[in-house]
Figure 1 (cartoon, rainbow, N blue to C red):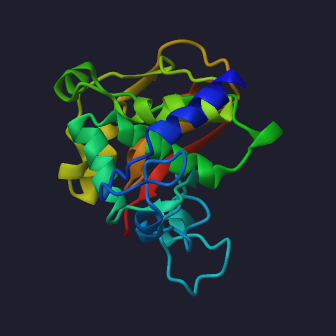
Figure 2 (cartoon, rainbow, N blue to C red):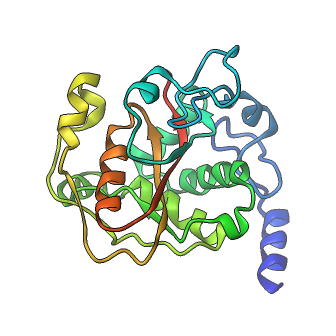
Length: 236
């Protein structure tokens, strides 16, 4: 109760500032109504991997890739498209260590998830970075997203469950055909999972190869269900 009162008082004294345009944000959120309206929702998407589909696709449709070769994860939740102005918030967090962006992005993701209730995952697990990449960036964007998300959903966070065992090349610089091999065997579990149902947290999902490799690793360790929760999905 005291925390909520202090937070409300701070919003009155220091109104939120939109992190996209610099204007006045909405109450309790560093985003104005105009910029919020410009963020594109991923409304027509594959029911498994969340790849954007044509608007005419019936609800529950699967993309061609998931029909031919389903990923190891059970479901991807990707409520937004990787497009302006959301891409600026994501790159600002990932490459410029703007932690305020992480709080806003986690809020946007939380707003679309609703209240999982008894169907909530047992743990949230951020996609890990290799130590060399972590030193280069100074932060793990997946972990910075997962922290406020775990607090708001009241789901335990297990940032040490997964480790990256080798420094693979950045997926963004590779052709789609090379990405699967690039991450094969790149992850391991650091301790026995204390969960049967895990949600893996990341910022963006493109081909899904990293997420699928992580799901394979977790299921080999005994996790029964693996979902992937990301802020945005890239177009095909």
